Amino acid sequence: MLDGKLAIVTGAGRGIGRALALRLAEEGATVAVWARTAAEVETTAKVIRASGGRAHAYLVDVADPGAVRAGLHCTESELGPVAVLINNAGIQGAIGPLWENDPDSWWATVKTNLGGMFHCCRMVLPGMVERQQGKIINLSGGGATSPRPNFSAYATSKAAIVRLTETLAEEVKPYNIQVNAVAPGAINTRMLEEILAVGENRVGMAEMAAASYRAQQGGDSLAHVLELVTFLASDASGALTGKLISAVHDPWHEWAGKADELNASPLYTLRRLDPHTIKPLLGAITES
Image 1 (cartoon, rainbow, N blue to C red):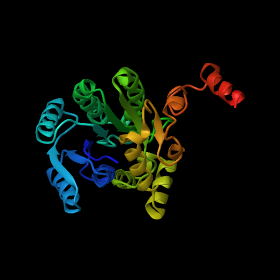
Image 2: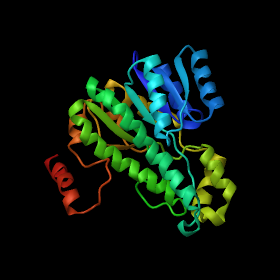
Image 3: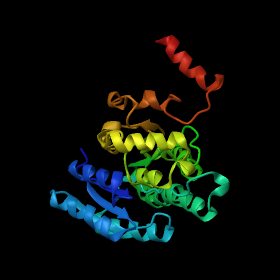
Image 4: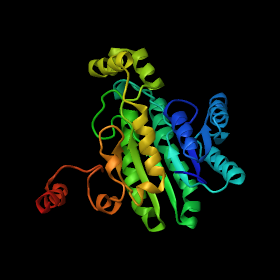
């Protein structure tokens, strides 16, 4: 499905990023594994190569524009032009009431999650524009569509990622480049361990109860995320762009060949619910 394509996966040293890198390689892509921990990126690349895939490891801190520039130069010099960019790198950062958050920790979350996406998109896009094709997939997360108390830095950065996704999608639409965001669901990662470690006093009763349940019963299936990202990275998604798609809850399995219809709809985007927004939806329902 992705034969001959080069994909960059940021934050690919562990967790969702590593799983995405493995899946894209299984689908035939050459994967540039980006992360800021050398041992982790090397491990991911070795696992891919051991299974017969093609992968190269690069030490890149996406919050540092100089590191992103150098990483992209090395990646394209060694592997060729980037066809797919997966912005997965992210941190949870400051936890607790906003007035108790350390400012440096709060801003570091935004710089990594949102700033990292910005730097990577900004530097990859000129080549995609020149080639008149490309796929960019940004990982959203908890707090993007509803309040998430005691996680203001994380929620703010993830909501901003979605709006930047929508805005960028419109900017690059004339160049046959598609930009979408993925809500992965409640996947058990190291972030879950961080929540359990800080305790109920910092995260709140509801968040702790949900985290404890996930730790005992397991989170949402990672398989949905892998399948959705593969769909968006491939030609199967067509011109579908500017959407926030839930890997767990949205019927994206049915969307092949429906890009034009979906692109014309305010569904699967960040919108305020009001008569102006709802009117085209009501019209579509009436016509059907």
